[in-house]
Image 1 (tube, rainbow, N blue to C red):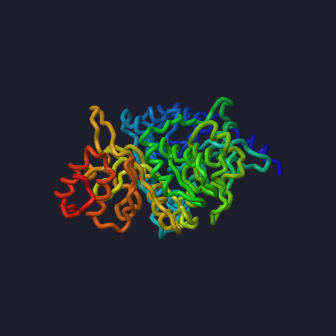
Image 2: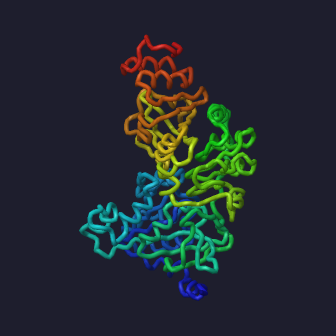
Image 3: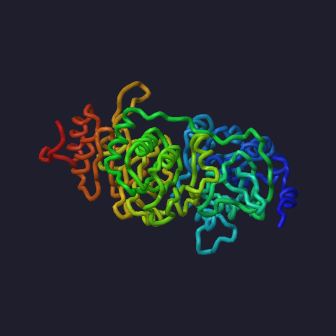
Length: 473
């Protein structure tokens, strides 16, 4: 069948396509590099005639979305608070964070947002928009996303942001796609492409519209020390999950330079470190129980070199997030090693990976999913990493290991789920440890400058006494 006639029939201009949006509608942008650019600009041009339009997205990447400049018309909601959203939030009040269990995102779309939702399932936040007294039942959910060029079978590859995309399309009343010829074709897996029969309007991006290329974050000496501690726990056949940043990239570089072999990859986020590990031959997936010889991921943000590596690469498999991040799927690979970052840990071993007090810094993402899934894995391990200190806005050194999390801080990982905590001063295992032992172990990897005070605070909280050994005082 020739799908190009259907393509031509659905092809339109950005300004025409966004006419489907009316006051009170919910517009769901593609996540990550799937966020529209020219359709976002067209929607922003309609700001004077629109109000109460809600925009959903996740991990806002440059360019800055135009709609956020018009808070009188659009409310902006990010499922995963990114650095850019954080900066925008300081300028625009109508920007909010929506915490979710990331592996449940497709469920939210298919069963909580769908119009044909079963009566016994609470329709969640879609019902909020439908049931407000000032709104009519004509509220629409509209998906707008970037995709790669259509192939001869009528499929648009969704590039390095499988995530919730197919479920979003299922739930939407209208689907608008922005075709970007620079989108890498990312092989599945499953649900890595959308057929034209599921699309209502097509627009074509300019030839020079590129994906956001993340700047290189060189590892610090602290990153290197943390990575070296983690490396002591890795062995042939481990399956690795990494996040973004200098420390995970350092782990990838150390692995690439090591004599480890037959490593596997199963991760939420594909980053440049995986390119290093795969190209070095250290990561081939040969020992994986599932998706053998494939590095599995649900989205990717990195350099242009990484996007070029991903294009039509048979070593990679793109899956929706309800596969990659489901702890039950993660646990099917033996020797799973999860390596995540945090902001603070208190002496009870509660982990905050997303806020400074009430100020949202990041989102919880899939950290919960991988912390749990890795520990369900046979011989699996979870490492939560952080530098022992940071320098505050006054130039003063502060400890990231604290007696108690500051008021209004978010607990991303509860203490009973914590496996290993790692700083530049070492790695400690906290599973099944009583409170005094947790405090003792955490103080042992805190910066020496703060250890005396942490001991005093632990005594004050009655979770450590002078009869407990090990702590230098």
